Length: 398
Image (cartoon, rainbow, N blue to C red):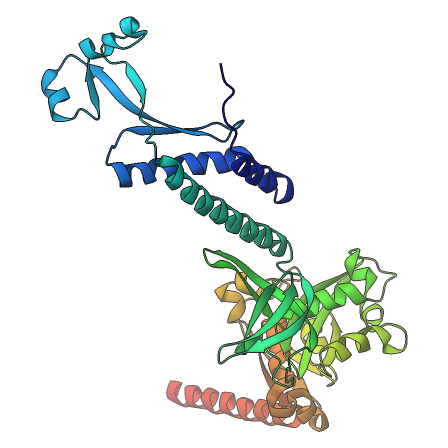
């Protein structure tokens, strides 16, 4: 008996995919058999066939699959699907067949090798592309919510593209670009990987320079105490490229969270400012007392008093939600009036209202800032109105 001919090209391709690309032979063979079944049906018309691929020799055989029946009308109507019991028992070793059994009969065409070769090439290339896409997706999915260094490669009307390595580009949209930065091809920049999507055209990676999370990751990198959990970031409010406020705290009473983040002679925070092209940083201490936290958030302005406008008293445990997306409606509607010295009013409000705006986002309180004299005048007016109302009531009673 002669040895079966070995398809060395096919076996070599399978071995290459498994060893070099990590794609298991079984996965490719299964996809190949399915594709060959479709190719056979398309070229030869039979519906019920199975393709068998020999993983040792690389040879391919096609089998027609028929159900044995005693219904002659069914056989006459569709001989591709049914075989009569009498015909089945005429086959070699056919005496053991019975009604309902399936019989596999080889129907491999002589010219099927050409179709098989073309189909196999398409399947292998498709699996190779899919696996390479999966490898890239899996790699960059691990970088999601992290900082990665890349090189600006090109730009169009929608995105600035950053080469992240391995021929992979991250797309940075208009809102993710720093307004004070201008990017040029070959510029090396650090970006925050905000989202990785698995698209059929290949992984889509979106990066940002404006996300507050970028600032958080930079602090984690520059401040070891944040990385190890000694100092924690409660919240970040940022107007990218201009100014940011970062609220930090520590559960260790011996650790100064603000001083730790600033670093010796400001070295730690300065490294972050330099990376963000001069973006100013206000590092403030987060405390559970909302009044003290609001006063800290309005730094560098001095705060005389914080008056909460809601009737419900604010408990000491009522802090700031660390996740802006999970803030409740009640929290977003909380408001207060902050009293500052007359000469501190413009400082508290900030240029174009920025200091007050960032403090409000940091604390999640709507903040109305008033000078001490303005507050005093309002209290005098309120007292006068209350006195008039009291007199009106007394007169009506008389």
